[in-house]
Amino acid sequence: MRPPSRLAALKDRNFRLLFVGQSLSNLGDQMTPVAITFAVLNHHGNARQVGDVLGAGTAAMVIFLLFGGAVADRVSRRLVMLSADALRFVVQSGVAILLFTGHVSVLALALLSALWGTGAAFFNPAMTGLLPQLLSGEELQAANALRGISVALGGVIGPAVAGALVALGGAGSAVALDAASFAISALTLVRLAASHEARAGTTSMLRDLREGWDSFVSRRWLWSIVAEFGLWHLLVLAPLFVLGAVVAKDELGGATIWGLILAAFGLGSVLGGILALHWRPRRPLYAATLATLPFVVVPALFAIPAPVPVIVVAGFIGGGGFAIFGTQWETTMQNEVPPEVLSRVSAYDWLGSTALLPVGYLIAGPIAAAIGIKMALWSSSVACLVLTLAVLAVPDVRHLRRREPSPAPS
Image 1: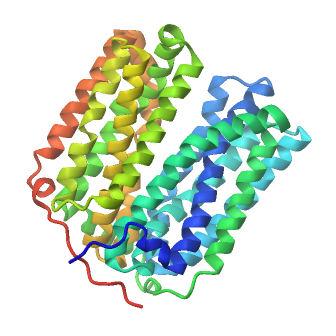
Image 2: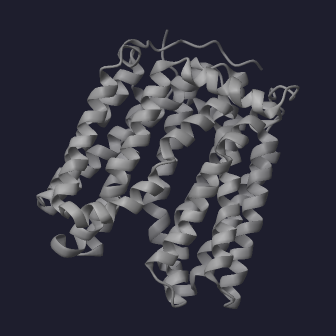
């Protein structure tokens, strides 16, 4: 069978609307952390208070993810997403008003951030479940790759735009644009043609969650990779973001170099997304996990520390590998997990993968103080290698074959 065009998904009106709305919404989301950080610092706040505000959003998302996934499997996923966008539009509009008027408090920003995270907890699992309802199966990989490219571009462009807006018009202008992006996203969702909706809820929420859990743990490839990424966020990503920034400041040239390295990762993710449009491996999870293996060297390069160009190249390659992984992972879940439990399974994926990230941020500093920054980064590199090899040793990950799914019903 001839593979679909790399842009086949964009020929579908529903996906085009969704793609435009989510691309703009993601761009706005990438601007907000920069704006909020400077909003707190410019109103006599400190780093701990910045962490409190940003962490409130992550904590709320983790708390409500399972409930959000269960709701998305019971009712219209489009309605869930629309409601989440409406909530986040109101929240970000409120934040912008506070910033424009100067009535800023850490408590108010933290509470609003928690409401934002609650919206994300409902939106993300519903989004995973909605795509297979809109597209034929053979277009899913292209759709997931395009979404990955959009996220990566947002990660490169959003912080830069936010920095300029904060400098020119204050943090409120950047947050106001994020609010507008949610309004646009909601409008695109309203214009989606009627799609096949999730089943009506006829059982208790607890039973729904149990069904989602049973579906999650019955697939060894699924829970193995989720467990890997949960530990990876704890032991690799969080320490790298905390300690890598310290190394960049003290030994590599400062914040500009750190920004360059992060931008290289983002640009690598764009390239990886483009490659994912073409590549359809027969063993998707095995190939995708191998694609993440080069990232093992990144913490070690900071520990040395290696010359900046070497770290930039490694970050670029690592970003590409994770973009390839993300596309194969989303497509495999959508093809292998029954649609009636897909949002719940996606919620368990989100929860298991991200719940330990805030803990990682909290323990990175004390661990570095106890054993030294360089040893902590070397330990992260070893942990990354061990986790990746452990997943590659799982037979279900190595042997799962790409399924040629049936077209989605029209």
